Image (cartoon, rainbow, N blue to C red; front, side, top):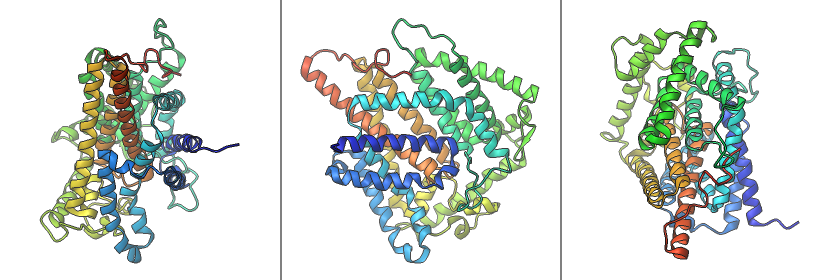
Amino acid sequence: MLITQRSLQGFWLKVLVLALFGYAVLGRGFSYFFVGEFILVLGFFIFLESQRVMLLFSDSVLLLWAIFAFWGFCRTVPFVSTYHFDAVRDAVLWGYGTFALLITAFINRSNQISRALNSYRRFLRWYLPVLPLLTLVSFAYKNMPTIPWSNHVGIISLKRDDAAVHLAGAALFLLLFPNRRSASEKQGMSIYRLAGFVGWSLTAVIILVMNRSGFLAILVPLIVASIVKTRTVGWKVALFGITSILLTLVVLEANLIPAQVSTKQFTSKQIASNLGSIVGAGNSDVYLEGTKEWRLIWWKKIINYTIYGPYFWTGKGFGVNLAQDDGPPGLTKEETSLRSPHNGSMTVLARMGVPGIIIWVALNLTFVLRLFKAYRLATQSGSQFWSRLTLWIFCYWLAAIISMSFDVYLEGPQGGIWFWSIVGFGISAMRVQAYETQLSIAQSGMRIIDATNSEYSPVHA
């Protein structure tokens, strides 16, 4: 049997998809099996064999990531002798960006994109119904079997912000890509759709009660998609929201969820406190305001010793425990062990200095501007598939950015690998779209007929 580069790349992509689903289901628990790191090394060797290193210099986002990674490497190596494995562990902040490079190199055809979306839809059919149980077990079950070589991390350890990002991505995918097997088939309410909707709504309730940033990670992308696609998405989100609110009230009144989970009360009062804290209302509870306060103190301290202080050019590097070194008030023992200031951009600034944060911001702005350009091209050419896909990728990216702005997300595999995979998938989609657009114009000189329109492509279960 002849093993070709294409078959190796296809196998790697399938394994990566399974790993991403594993992170979405088990969260931190899955990260301690080090599957993502093994896949990264394997993919890197396949990439070197493909002799496509020049891809780094042909794409603006990948080039900025290469610069970002080079500067991160320079801020990691000097600290390995002092902090050993801790320096390498912290370096995943930039190292996981290799997934974006590998995905861009290995996905270069529209049928690969369609297959990826089909796999994601099949995953959602059973993921959404079980997600409420996964979140409750992660937060409330104290006798969860732990992974022996971890620091008492349960096998199922799904963080609230991680679940929120996936919840936003799932809702927008199902709204933007309705499950149509044919143009004439009606959208009935199947048992799968009903179970998925109930599972999504219950998980949203749990996140709303337990976590403010997670709720924002769900809400903001949905609002953005509703504004951009008012006719096709906006009314669905409005109906979806009203139904979810009614379901929330039923759940709270019927006490379908235990009254208290991890110091949080599943009551309308707790929801009001969370919402009030988001908008700055003064009646928020002391705990919520306290967690907000120590974050602001810590971030201000980082700004002072980088932008206005001695670490302007270099940052503190990778390896030092920022929680212990900066000493912000109010941190619990668990939060100190996380090592990072609950904000991905602040972590970049603290460890890589002002040059690092400039490159980081430029990378993300370039990615977003290219998505906007691709979306405009798709709408001008009448391509429903590409316009919906670029909007979905942007909203998924936005949910991740919101989550990493208030939690340790980018610094771990369950968030970092997902984030860089979204970036890589977005770059691949834009490159394939640009190529097919140019090919269609060259062949016909006419208005583009989108062969991968979601009405007719195999993008359904």
